Length: 220
Image (cartoon, rainbow, N blue to C red; front, side, top):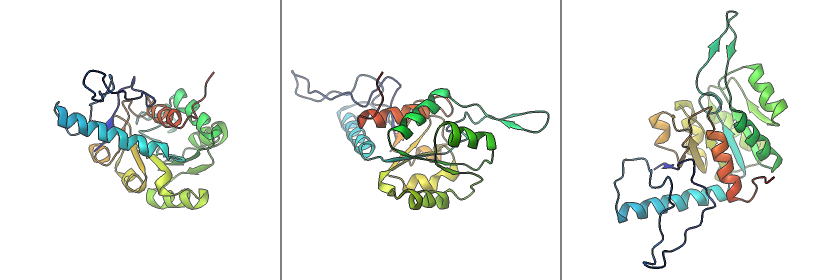
C-alpha cells in the first residue's frame, strides 16, 4: 500500500495526543490520502497512522538513493531538434537536493535506459553523482552492480522509478518510491508516492523528507 503525502506535510511533524480524548490525531495536511480509495473512519485512520509510521521507519535507515531519469528527473517529455537530437527538461531544485545529498554522505545512483552524454555530464560532473549507469535495459543487474560497488545493502536503499522497467529494483529496495504520475503497476508496489510528478520536484520532495528525518537537511 503506497502512502501519499501532500506537499505541505513535513516528516518532522510530531504526533501529540489530544488532551481531551487522549487520541493521537492525524497530521493536518495530506493524510489520509492512501492508495486504494479508503474511506474515512477510525479503522482507516489507524491504518493510515500505521502506514505513516512504517514509511518513516524505512526513511530513517536509508543510506543510498537510486533514481531513474526519464519520468522521475524529467517530465517524460522529449523535444527533438531538426538534427535529431533529444532535449530533456529537468528541475533545478531536484538537482540542488541531489548535491546536498551527495555532500551529506549518501550514495547516489542513476540507472537509465537513455544514453545522453548531456544528461550524464549533468549528473556526474555538475551534481557529483559517482554511480551512473546508462543504456540499461535490465535495471535489476545495474541495481546489483550499484550494491556491489558501494557496499550498500538493499535494506538501506531508497529507489524512485515510474515505469515497468523499474519494478525489479523497486521490489528489492527497502523504500520503494515513485512520482505522482507513475504507472499504476509501479504505484502498487511503492511505500511512498510523492505528491509531485516526474521532473517537477518529486526527487527534491523525497530527499528533503528523508534528510530532515535524519537531521541532515542543510540550514542557512
